[in-house]
Length: 125
Length: 125
Image (cartoon, rainbow over all chains, first blue to last red; front, side, top):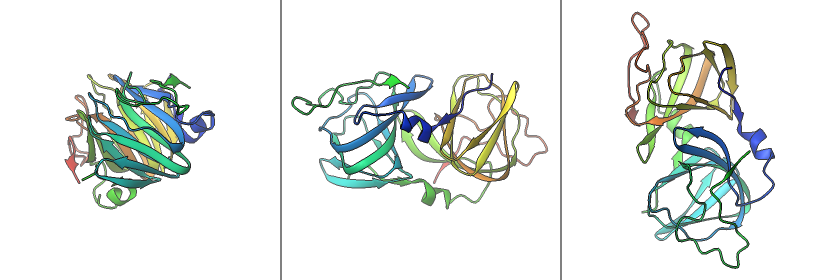
């Protein structure tokens, strides 16, 4: 069989929980994850890897310690390893994350106590 | 300065040559490349790496030895390492490729003699 087609809109439709990235593809030892975001995440960083955010629908703000940037549909950013960031958005947005398999959504330093956010490396959908 | 925003439509507008992927981002040792495609590429494979195609605009067909699949805007595919493939499209399409830095567009076995296609690992735009 030829390699499978992955439709990002159809995959996003399967996601019911916000701030909980789901894996849709693997390339070598990297995962492609989709997520629905709304509200505020926590400050965190990834000590050992860069991380890519690609905006599929809506707008995503990311606070960095030296400023906030708003990303719209069709825009992407590489957050360098070790750089603290805090994603947030008032309206729900849909994103794709690209990062090494096993990367945690909260990094090594995200404090999720009392937020309702769950730590996850992603599950396949 | 916060990490730079990369707008895929604006970057694609800078590309004038077809079948010549241009690098727009680096995550760890991987490159994100944009390309405009029209016509037929050559059969080739990448012995050491998987390769991701994400369709940004239009439609892309990829012939595999066991069938052809048509990919539309918002769809992606992971071509596993070693799998022969031949991209083609009648109308121009815009794609993003994700693969290790240094990956050649023609793989190790693409025969471009007489096609006008140039071998490239991509240049930054």
